[in-house]
Length: 341
Ligand SMILES: Cc1cc2nc3c(=O)[nH]c(=O)nc-3n(C[C@H](O)[C@H](O)[C@H](O)COP(=O)(O)O)c2cc1C
Image (cartoon, rainbow, N blue to C red):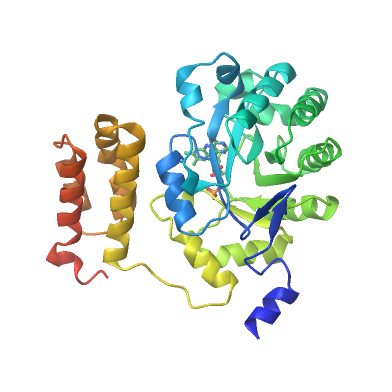
């Protein structure tokens, strides 16, 4: 019965989403988050069931100038595929060049950032600045579309004022330039990440377009995924901050979408995920850098557990990945955690 109901409702069945030529297993997407959605994090999200992961934003300028640190952001692992790479920039020629580089590295989808409201980016005319410069945006979209065979998306905000007029105009422009899907994070440039996301803007964009629309903003738990789809009609749902230290939100959302009971990871389950994150980080970043990073990042996964500040403190004294694994293992096996699971 549930299966038939989900099938009839189409988008509520976790098996449906297509962006251009890319078939996705379900409608869930990990949001790009600079400094967070690096390769190890994306692998966890993918393993938890999300259909598409997106890189951190990558500078188009850095790519065409072959900056080593920028190129490193394109590194990928077969286990995380399909992978979307997001680029930002404001020069059509540079964006076209960067898009070709992304395609040549084997990414599965290219996304253009039309949402970043950080002053440094906006001053360059990139990110959300492009939402008030339709001529430049059109030139970028046409140049990139012409150079690219990959599926192609844009990720936008509401725009510069709350009505959603710029979001609609940008979305229509994107569709007319051959973009395959749009992501809408319905906050204004001025809002940053504060206040509430206005999901009605997602609904307006969905209403206006024929290509898929992915809604984003304020998904705090699995129920919100269904709520957003019902309220806006969006085809996909992108999850950002709620996945930090909590990749199982994707598994829970899939359960919710399929009308199954929602599983809650017990302590051994959580431990297993943190250990994988540490291992993937050592593999990807090298031991020294990964051990340093784990001082703050293990805390993402232990939020709310007893004595987590003591754990953070002990992590500052460690030198090797093996030591980090052992300390984290000991921490999770403390008797005071028995009541938590
Ligand atoms: C730390 C951080 C970094 C972010 N970096 C990016 C980015 O590189 N590109 C982008 O399009 N959005 C970026 N975002 C915005 C998220 O992709 C997302 O739109 C926003 O967090 C709203 O979704 P949420 O409520 O599910 O977190 C970032 C957000 C955060 C919190």
